[in-house]
Structures are given as C-alpha cells and as structure tokens.
Amino acid sequence: MSTHLLALRDFTGEELAGYLRLADSLKKEAAAGVRHLYLAGKTIGLIFEKPSTRTRVSFETAMYGLGGQVVYLSGRDTQLARNEPLKDMARVMARYVNGLVIRTFGQEIVLELARYSSVPVINALTDLHHPCQILSDIMTVIECKGDIERLNIAWVGDGNNMANSWIEAAGRIGFKLTLACPEGFEPDPAILAAARREARCPIELVRDPVAAVRDADVINTDVWTSMGREGEEAMRLAHFAPYQVNSALLAAGKADSIVLHCLPAHRGEEITDEVLESSRCVAFDQAENKMHIHKAILLTHLK
Ligand code: CP
Ligand code: NVA
Image: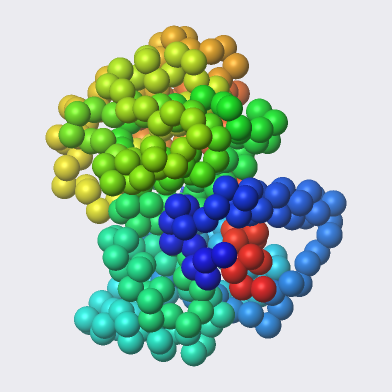
C-alpha cells in the first residue's frame, strides 16, 4: 500500500474499501463510548496554505480522539512564505512529526513534499484533488443507500478537484458516474481518460444537468469558484447559472435521490437554501464522516 495518500488512483478498490470499513467501525465504537489510544505518543503536522474549517478540525479531532497530538501551521506563518524550499521543510518536519497533512495549491507541491518526507503525507486538498473528502462522501452514500456499487452518481457543476477525485474513485469502485459541466469547465482530461480505462462502470461527461440527474441515486455539487480562483468569480457565475441544484432539477430525477455537498456552500449559487436545508441533503453527515474517515486514514498510515 502507498505510504502517502496523495490521490485515490494510487490505491486499489480493496484498499479504498479498507478505509471505509475501518471508519465505519471506529464511528460505531465512538458512539458506543469506546476510546482508543492507538496513536498515543504520535504527532501530525498540518500545513494549510488555504483556509479550512472542516478538514482542519476533523483531522485535529481525529488525531486527538486516537490519543495523538497535532501541530497546525498556516502556510503564511512558516518560512515557506519567505521562500524556504519545500524540500528542506519536508526533511525538517519529518524530524518532529510522524505524519504530514497538507492543503495547498498545485498537486506538484504535495508530490514534492512526499518525495522528500520520510513520514507519510496526506493530501487535504489541492487544486487537482480532494481525496479524503471523497472517502467521507462515499462513506455517507453507503450509510444512506446500503452500498455504492452499481449506484448512479451525478456530479453537477465545476469539473474541479472534487470532480477529479470522484472520477478516480469511479475508476476503482464499481459505480456509474455522470458529470454535467459547462463547456470549458470539464474535469482534468488525463484523470478522466485514465479512470475510463480502468473503470468497471461508465464515466460519462454531459452538458445537460437534467441528463446527469435523471437516473441518479446521488446528486453531488460544489462551489462554482474554488479557492485560488476568486478572480474568475464573476465570469464563472454567468457560465454556471444553468447548473444550480434546485428543486426543479431534483424534480427531474428520482424521488429518493440524495444530495451531497462537501461544504462550504454558496446558497443561491450552486445550490439553493431550500435543497441544502431539505431532508434529501446529507451535507452535515458528510461533514461528520470526515472525522471518522480521517481517523481511519491516520490509523492506516501512521500506526
Ligand atoms: N469540505 C471541506 O474540505 O471543507 P473545509 O474547506 O472547511 O475544510
Ligand atoms: N472545490 C472547493 C472545495 C472546498 C472544500 C475548493 O477547492 O475550494
């Protein structure tokens, strides 16, 4: 198994299922009041060069919940902000901590950190991937639907980091994925091509959001303007307007479909307040499951 968790494609379907099973049992044990100190005496470093509420707090509470310690470093507070080479930061941090969790811009930054780090590196979001989030989301789908195999998953909106990681998951796990993205905002073509070569079920790219949700069991969306692309916001609002997940779009699909959003949400843009607050939307279960999945990831990579 890969030492690092940088992208979902680096893992087999069985390895991905392993995180999901472990997270499920840890969640049930936590609910039953069982306390584990599996990571007592261990410390992780969180290096965050973009803002975060859920990912930061759920990694911190996951680590504390397993008896471990956390050091949080905002990118601007380290010598990285004064151009210390990342390869030096990687080797220094690895002398202090047992694992590194990083949220940053380019995927190449995470790859370089992993190359020079002698401790496991976990990708907590880059411009290209958000692998840990998709594991939490799949866990949530399985809780709601019993399984994800053979389900129809729809992605509506930007072909962004979340979409890319869903595509990689579809390459490893047997579910059908249909993505509806506006022209010019498709997912990464190399990620899509690689996943299509390996997937057991179709991965389709369409323009029409109705075509994506018609047979969907799960409807997924995310912000139209991801972190780092704020300068494109006005242009994006115009392109994405037909891709809002609202009651009319839900009415075009199955009555028992569920809606996923990794949060933070921009109500009135990619999703309406009505849909986000409805019982069909499981965004807050996804948020909780991030902590259980992060426990499983930390245990798998650090133990
Ligand atoms: N979903 C997610 O990654 O949220 P944060 O940006 O708050 O970490
Ligand atoms: N696509 C979003 C996800 C935020 C959790 C972003 O990168 O900003």
